[in-house]
Amino acid sequence: MDRLDMFDHIPKVCQKCGGVMVFKGVGEYQCEKCNFLDYDDYGKVRAYIEQHRGATAMEIEAAIGVPQKTIRRLLRESRIQVAEGSKSFLHCEICGQPIRSGRFCPQCEVAVHRNMEEKQREQLRRDKKGYGSETGGEGQRRFMREN
Image 1 (tube, rainbow, N blue to C red):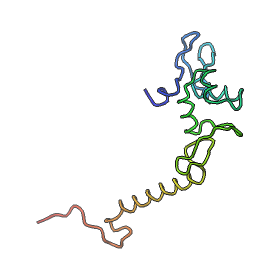
Image 2: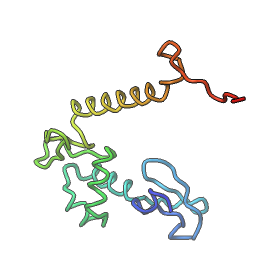
Image 3: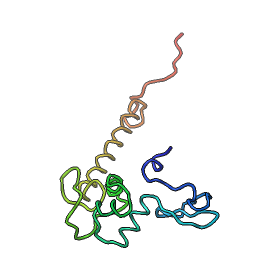
């Protein structure tokens, strides 16, 4: 069972005819036999939000049965956004600034990415050290025969 199956309740078998459901995009699945449309949790939430702008997670859960925990996960993954003008917001995990989706505000996201890139560059430098590439011949010989 992969990650998406555990969280998004992906329809695999048609409820009407038992046929195979094929992914069509944006959380929508269609039966190969009878063309019946069904949705995973993301598709259900997205469709509900499109029809009911500004709905809260509690309202969405009550209307379509998708748990609030799943809705919060979709917000953190930036798959959906808090409606503009809404009184409820997510908060940046670093600075606490209100955000509409994701984990970080734009400024902190840039800082996190720069920090990750710098760590990767440093790791590459450490991995190369000792082979004489950057240090002007400090590398050690490998595979020497001792006679």
